[in-house]
Image 1 (cartoon, rainbow, N blue to C red):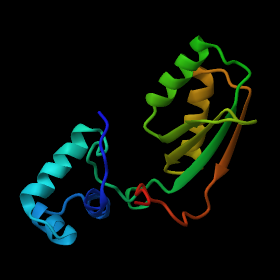
Image 2 (image 1 turned 45 degrees about the vertical axis):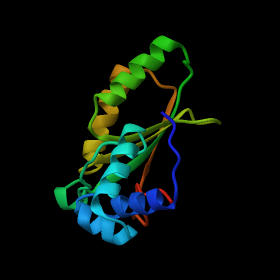
Image 3 (image 1 turned 120 degrees about the horizontal axis):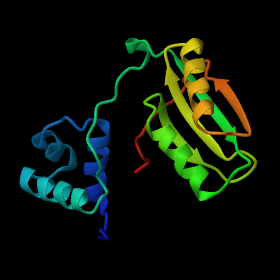
Image 4 (image 1 turned 180 degrees about the vertical axis):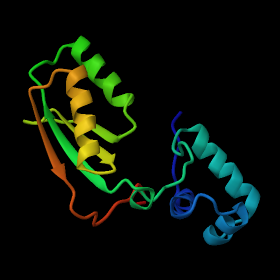
Length: 153
C-alpha cells in the first residue's frame, strides 16, 4: 500500500520517534491538531507499513551487556544453502542485534551485544561451529558516541 506523507504526518512521526508512549492528546497538541485526526493518521501510517512494531529501548550496559562488537565476516561460499544456514544461525542468536549483507570486500557485518569478551568468544565459537566462514574480524566498540533508530524526518 502506497501512502503520501505530508508535513502533519512527519510531525506525528517525529513525535512518535521521540516518545511512542505519549498520549494521543500530547501528540495532537505537538502537531497542532485534535485527537481523532491524529489517531486516523497513525492508523493509516500503520496500515501502510510506515509505522512498525512498538518496542522499548533498554539500556544495555545497565543490564550487564557491556561489550559491543562489530563483526566483519567474509565467506568463500555464496550458494543458497550456505546463506540459508548462516541466516538461520544469526536469527537464532539473541546477541546479534543487527546483521547486514554488504557490497565490497566484506560480505556481512554484525552488531553483537554481549556481557564481555568471554561471552563474545562463546558466541563466536558457536557460530563457526555451525557455519563455515572464510574470515572473521571482531572490532570492540570502546565508546558508543551516537545511537538512534530515529529517521531524519
